Image 1 (tube, each protein chain N blue to C red):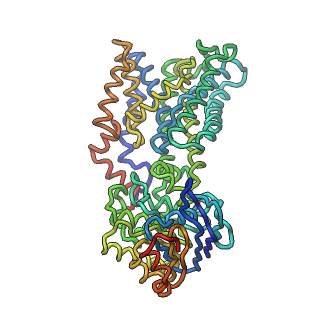
Image 2: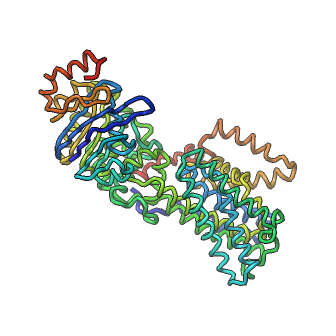
Image 3: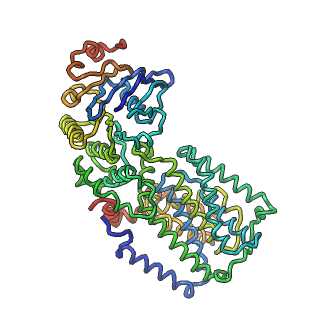
Length: 320
Length: 247
């Protein structure tokens, strides 16, 4: 039995990493600060996706739709309305979660692949709106030069804002992961029929998980706008959602922290291999093939296995 | 306590359950027996809501539960185990049972409280009663077959049921394991005051344990009576020996 969710031993290294990330911006080139901020945003997005994919066992094939909804909500509210700036930041995640509720309510009626197919279809509707409604969304041009509040308008302040919001979100996601809700969600992933038989309303539980996950995707969308000051329909395109899905698999979808690693690997590949060739996805393809054969549990899953953390996991979840 | 009245269920043209009747009194230990394919599992799936009957009623504590979804039937006080080990393979043994206890306590949707602190005592006591305490930290999927079957029962016990339904609890077990499991079932019935309904295709196993036996053949209830009466029934003997004609 663990005394508390966060014990000193495991938190220590994380605090060190956090402090390093805090002091980095003045030291490293501006470009790397930007890349790190993009990784934070994408990591949060992948983590929110993994809550339903890896822990919930749902085929969340179009998670990007909710990311895009969050981003477009804040972008539109900042450019088209004169409401106070913070309302846009609040509205982003809420509208994303409401969209999640609406789409999720249809999707949870189906199972597995059918769930995923329906979600792609419904999500693509939202993409089509963003892509074609020129007068509102700017169509395929998107919206650029979105004015940010002065306090987060510089690159470094945007970096810090993104980092802190991401850390807060990750802590909340971890609490959920370790909560009875999270435990039940993982049980549903393992065996939904059995969960019904022990008195759990599986569809309701899955829907709540989707709403929570899409809320965090909405936050990631808002952070994207903070970092990039722009939005474009590609965020909602299903191909991007597939990338998010791959990040979860790459990092280790049964672990908690895996998707962070997955996001970092994907962004790094795209950035640094992308400099040499626009066919960086070729490298990604090779990486994925290797992954399937050698690291089926993902990179982080492999590290945990290798360094015996699974016994600790077992004790944490167990009785001793 | 539980009454199944003239229940029917067919899959396409195949009549899996074709008029089954069953009565379970409170505190009873009732067995359903019948050859393979006689509809025992289908009957249990009809009772616990995994399947919906075409005709007939399932009455539990004066309420018709035949149209309720499984999770609601469970909340009425019926828990079940499955014929094939139906556990949560990636979770620890402890967590397997704990999820069920949390569901019983209505805490499944608690969001911001460490699950490791909840329902610990209840879970440990259940693990102890089925003899899995020392394996609490193991991943459930890695357990041996016999242990998985015990875990299967433990998960069902987590719901603190009034009626426990066990679908072939000894399937695939050696004679020793079978005896041990039957003793476990008997002990649970006594110590926890459970009403137990279980099924078996091996007749020998049940005669020592059950207070009442229902015999099924080709989806039909042949007889439900005390073990001795069932043993001497000519119709039962026909079913098990002759077989081809419906009794």
